[in-house]
Image 1 (cartoon, rainbow, N blue to C red):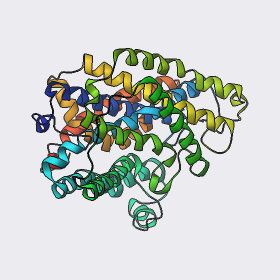
Image 2 (cartoon, helix red, strand yellow):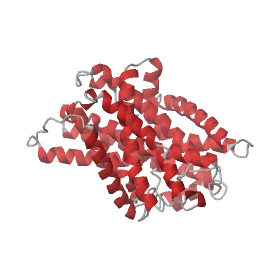
Image 3 (spheres, one colour):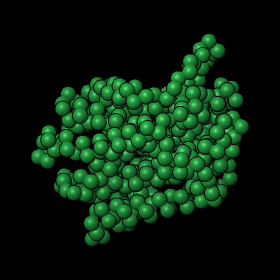
Image 4 (tube, one colour):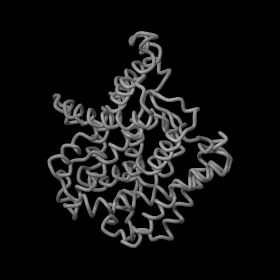
Length: 385
C-alpha cells in the first residue's frame, strides 16, 4: 500500500530513520496530483471532469501548463507505484500471503468502490449534468447501467489490485525456489539502455492505445514505466538500493532531467506544433516517437534526483508532516470534487487563467487536507484510510 504506517515497519527495515523521507515524498506527490488536475482545468492538455478554458486557443498559459503536466506525467504516478511496492517483500514475509492479500484488498478495494459508486458519479453529475437531469436519473442511466465507468484517479487503486494479485501469484509459484542474486544500483549505461528500451516499448504500445486511452480507464500507453517502477520498488527494498545511489550518478541524472525538459516543446515546434499539427499521443509518427523517447529520461532523472534529495533533506518528521502524511491517502480520494467546486466558484470571474490556476490549486490543497482530516475522524475510517 502506498499509504503505509511508518511505525508499523520499524524494526523490519535497517534504516529506520529513512522511512520518513518516503512519507514526505508521498505527501509531495499527492499535492502535485492536485495541482496537476487543476492545471488541466485551466489549459493543460489532457482530460478532466470540468475545464474552464478554451483549449483550442493555444497561448502561453496553455503551452506552459501543458509542459508542466507532461513533466509531471512522466514520473509522478510511476514513483507512486515504486513507493507502493517498496514494502511488498517485508509485508508479505511478515504477514503471509492471505493476510497480505486481504489487507491490501480492504485498503484498496473499499476506497475504490466508494469513489466509483459515490464520489466519482456525484462529481460528474454536479459538474456537467445537474441542470439536465436529476441525480437519481443520472445514476439510473449511467452508473447502475455501467454505461460509463467512474474510476477517475482511483484507476491507480484498480491497477494496484491487479499488481498485488500478480505479486502474490508470483510468490506462491516460486515459493522458496528463487533466490535473488546481489544487484548493485544500476549504473549510468544501464539506465540509458533502460530509458531507450522503455521509450520504444511505450511507442509500440501507443500504436494501439494512445495516451489517455485504455480499458477500464487504465491508460496503457503509460504502463510500461509503471510496471518497471513497480518491479524496481520490490528489487530496491530487497537490494537496499536507496542506500547505494552514487552521488555522481545523482548529479548527472539531475542535469539530464533539467536538460531534457525544454527538448519536448522544441521538438513539437520543429515538427509543426505551432501550426496545430500535434499528435504526440500515439500512432506511427515522429512526434509520438519523440514523446515516448523523451519521457523515460525525464522520469528516471527526476525520480533519482527526488529520492536522493528527500533522503538528504527530508529524512525527518514533525507534527505538520505527520499530519499531512496521515491524510494524504484521503486527499487522493476526495480531491476531484473539491477541485471541481473551486473551479465552478471562480467560473466567470474575470481573471487570467494562470491566476485562477494558482488560486484554485492553493484553495483545493488546503480544503482537501482539512476535509481529509475531518473524514478520518468518522468511525472505522482510519481502518481503511
